[in-house]
Image (tube, rainbow, N blue to C red; front, side):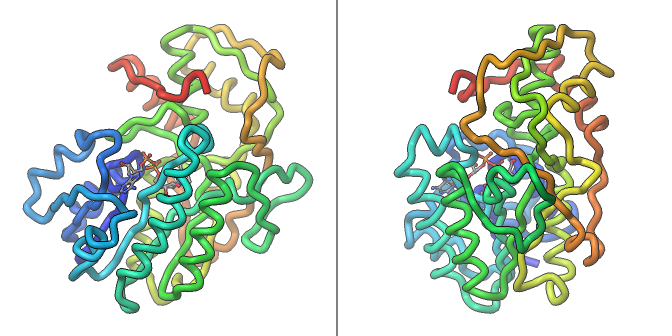
Length: 309
Ligand SMILES: NC(=O)c1ccc[n+]([C@@H]2O[C@H](COP(=O)([O-])OP(=O)(O)OC[C@H]3O[C@@H](n4cnc5c(N)ncnc54)[C@H](O)[C@@H]3O)[C@@H](O)[C@H]2O)c1
């Protein structure tokens, strides 16, 4: 299959693209390289890999990018509430108008997979969310992704995946993801203060995110024209659970104190019954993900541009 991955140089893309190439697909990445492109360096060894540097807000660039592909995986976005808060206009432009551009440029028979997010559910501590639960995003990030998701589903021949919070090691690393951040602090500082420890969150390993995209492309006719939560109930944890799990790998000082609040007050539990009923299960649990994060933190210094946001 010829596949376009917008935002393919990012955290999810730099795990997904090598996996698609390994499967023998031809992969074109269209990305503004906001965080550079080093995560895709190993892909350059594969002659079926192509990079087009460009902006999803540029219709002419997008038209060239979609030309001749069988499927589009639309990952390009300003991701997470701190990044959206930092540049709100760019976030709306990229997440909403960028998605509109890609949809407008694609042909109806080109499959379209969209990376949405569980952030669109907002704070619903009292019951378990499924795909029919009301969407009440709390942040600009959640709002823009909810709007984009609607555009995608209305366009047809599409799949929207509402991902849990990603974690794990990828070729482009992100530390603004909670398990990644907690593990890094535990390894580097030997110290972590957790606030709102009882808040419930739900997680998915970045490699399982990539697998879910390949799953959709492989079983398109049974998956298409719908929205799915992607994760696993066994990966619903409180922030305290995550911090305690890290203690099994790293000897560090864990302290609970209400010294802050998350601007994104996400507090929710999610059902993954719908995607499971289609045959998709995640494979990497929190413990395994943390063990790889520990090794990565020991290996190199990462930077978290949103550490103080
Ligand atoms: N990581 C998560 O926890 C998570 C969870 C749910 C959903 N998602 C979704 O998955 C997708 C990928 O997330 P990620 O974690 O890889 O983020 P990321 O920030 O690592 O990657 C985003 C990529 O998009 C590119 N990009 C940004 N603006 C662009 C523009 N205007 N034109 C072209 N490219 C542009 C960036 O250069 C970057 O390579 C996003 O759509 C995000 O909303 C992520």
